[in-house]
Image 1: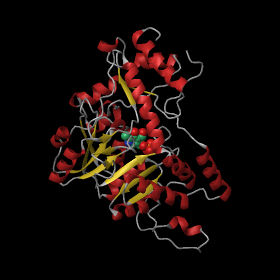
Image 2: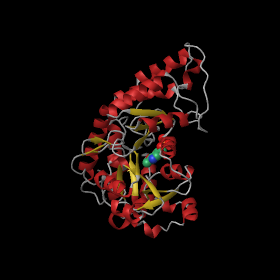
Image 3: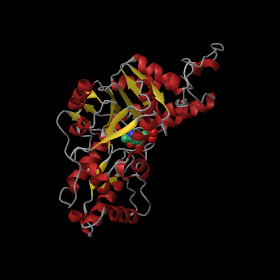
Image 4: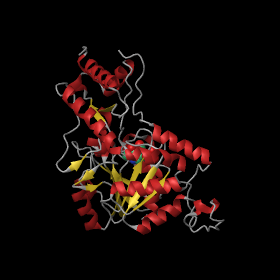
Length: 386
Ligand SMILES: Cc1ncc(COP(=O)(O)O)c(C=O)c1O
């Protein structure tokens, strides 16, 4: 058994970001500045999109996207029953009502047939989540959006590198939101980005992200002379700092290298676990790029002989940290009592939420770490050593 605990989702931090961070520290320009502008530019180039706005989280990105699209109190937004709470909270904080649709049992993504069933006269938008990095079925979702004149926001927190039919995720709907939280495919510690080909949307988001000040207010203290700023909206404090962008700029340079490392780990797990009594992630659909953000095992007691929670405890005792992504939204007390969600209406999401466990898949893993994970999974599921 390994002697130290393997923390789930540890990022790989390299010397370039440490040097860039220290450069900002030495220059004493810590807040929003030129490095944020550079990160926005580089990210837009990477995603092949015209405009990008950096913010301090994907939660902020989703909230501002709803506001920039003109979502009003009482509007309904349809989203998936299997996502992190942030997707739903952003809808609520925009004053709208989150209406949940169940997932497709194989892809774990929102089921477009379920979306169509949930549309009412109050529906204004759909927030799709490209779950675990696997793109949603965007052809049918965009068709529904067109038919009912709905906006589409893509929650790409798991899906920075993903593409659907050669289109980068986040550029297919009206607006795309990304996370650079510590466990994500690239990190700025905390951080997020909004992208769109619609200049007005990104311009509104930039204003709302910094108190509602007229744009470029961040440069009011620069050496080009003091500039007055004006409050043009009641905005938020959602701006990204140069300290965070110092990480983002260099993490982004390595994004495809990290993707290849995770793909190799993914393929290794798939081949080493194929004979175990456990359900592995579905194979990739044709003509998509999966960001391979989460490697999830489904622990069904009838198949595996143990419950998911027993599996988690056993892995923990073997010094392997795992994650749960996620309990389904209708399982949480706040959403249940506020929106009267009934778990039986979302059978696929609730079943998945009870069975899923994510095992480590970070570019920081050493060969020994990967072997330790494999041995622990095998030991837990077959009660034997390899
Ligand atoms: C699907 C999804 N959406 C949104 C978020 C929120 O991201 P952030 O922590 O950057 O606000 C997360 C974070 O884990 C997520 O997994």
